[in-house]
Length: 220
Length: 216
Image 1 (cartoon, rainbow over the protein chains, first blue to last red):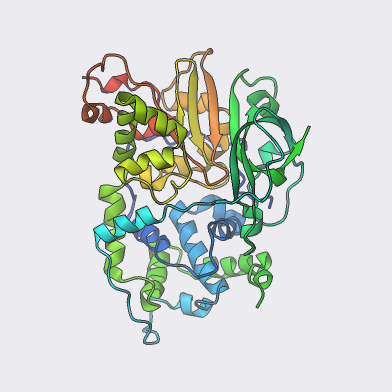
Image 2: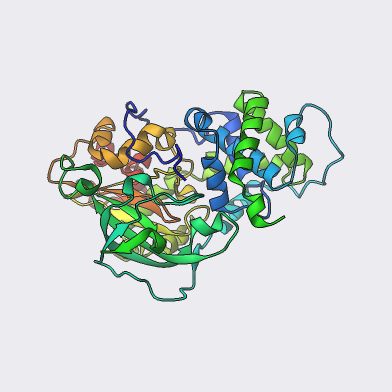
């Protein structure tokens, strides 16, 4: 979808708020939210569904509210959408005692958490059903138009010429996975010259590398 | 209910609006509502949340990445394995995990500088570098890093010579990136641990380049 999340190349932003070191979390609620994001979900959630939920935030909220608050709204909306909770239950959560509830799972200590983090090393590759259409060195051009739903071809790289620099085998395709369909397609790293993306004032030899799935690409 | 009915964008957008308009505006209270629900529904025990926070605040962070970089500087075999398949190489340390199932190390050189961004969201190799810096998730960084990387780098104090090419890696798939900075001159013979202390978080994202400032 053409959403505000697709920020690459947008102009008008000010200087970066540079920091060299930061605490992991800037506030207690941020840490709580990260912990909740790792422990709460519904069976039909995937990384791509989560990302699409973020993209569907009201645009004015997307651009103004803090990072972890977006995660919170996304988790809550996702739970409502997956019928784990109702909107009404969420709006009174924490303010009035609710139904007896479910028993808690056994508490995790830090070593259990560290093991769980290691186990979250997810493999998104899938067996290739057929060979890739492009090889290293091939010239390609990206699709010109946006598609409805969740996709990972940024607007700034649409309709642009690039060159294949790496093949990664087949990976789960976000454009299908967000809908609950498990499909995979060959994934490539494509090099785009900065001048192809931004015009003649860009520095020669500067480049932007994107990881793009085969359906985003056409031969030249 | 079919999958498609459960993934209706208009419906999702409406739930977002309802919740955003009717929840208290304070994000801390919003997270509290989620926490109450999560505990009540048996997703997680409250004390486990403390353990998750502690894990990322104390144990998982850029010091992990720094150890990997220092190992690559001193051990040619590890250096080759890291560039070949970083996900497997970091498993030597037990640092594989959340968001590092597909990890690529990209190496700086005298004539090349690498910079990592995620323009579409804020993808980051959490199990290796910990939580992302606030600027990494900012709209300004996400918008500008691909279009004017040299101006962005200058704001971080990195003034690149014209003969140093910039490669910006936009994390659009499940590959995550680790910048392998250049080992500073004057550190010959240093032990791995001492070298690791020179490696900064920003250098591993690509918003720092020269690590010689840490040589006392």
